[in-house]
Image 1 (cartoon, rainbow, N blue to C red):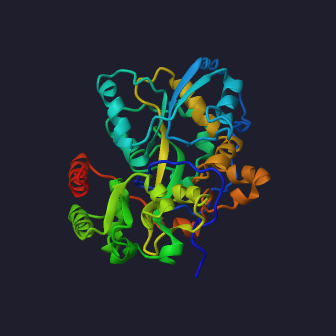
Image 2 (tube, rainbow, N blue to C red; image 1 turned 135 degrees about the vertical axis):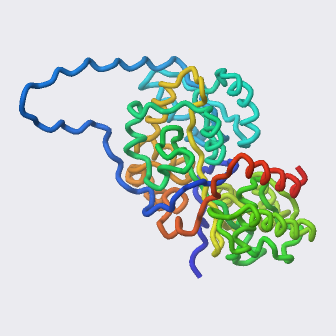
Image 3 (cartoon, rainbow, N blue to C red; image 1 turned 60 degrees about the vertical axis):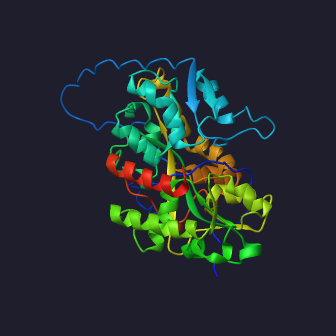
Length: 402
């Protein structure tokens, strides 16, 4: 049998809540494509008089501070001082900006609730840069509550964004989002107890009754039920969604499911209270340091792929400096610096080559730079209309007792 995907422990892992991927095409290659320079090309020679160029528009001055909201443990961090982040220190050294970095996002809907009122009122949320999952980013685009990037201020983003992350259906011009990290959802299990698990059907196996957890993220959990029924997460109908809810209801009524959880399932796997979980790749790899028999595997029938995005809320006080930060982390050397600590999937061209200079084992990791074969095994959850989203959220909330 092939080696389980992502079965090797790697140092330092982020702990975060995953979402879904709407309109995300499969990568044709890993994140290893060389990055491109943002230096303008030499203009072609021409005959006739030389036109008089208009004086360039002066760039704004970077702000003294930048308010940045992100998920916990989702940026390079000093192992001896969790308040220190070299990437942010490097940004300040170059631009003079103090980044007020806050790990305040633990759930997409929960954080949305904290910014909804000011956005509705046309007011500044207090954040200049936020990181949210693709489906929530799509909602904010639809509500017109995000600032459009000035692409002239983010040349590294324009040049170095991996092709597979470009043009989701909710932002086809790539002017409202810049991917931060991506991840996968699949089987997380204690191989010492379960043996090798390869199929999504394991989530309905009575053998693991009371020792198995599902996720509170609707798109992950319903996505596995859709796959079990033979439906596509990218093209399913509302009737097929309802069938998936019914399939999950069977497992709930049979008391197969111990609980619907966020990433606390990882601690339960370590303690032994749980032996099988719908899991996010980074959580399992992190916990292998505590229990080496834990395994993450994409089911044979397919897994879920999602990504989180840097977004600028409408009315942000320091929009230009937020664009500078986006462009800064899209430099391959800075992206590699972040990946060396976070170890999630990299969206930046050239980062693999940079990381190979200092950590070749990480540069070859399927966690950070998945192969085309791995990408072929994972898909995203299609975009939804407001009416569909309301129907789905209500049905899922009833299922989990929320």
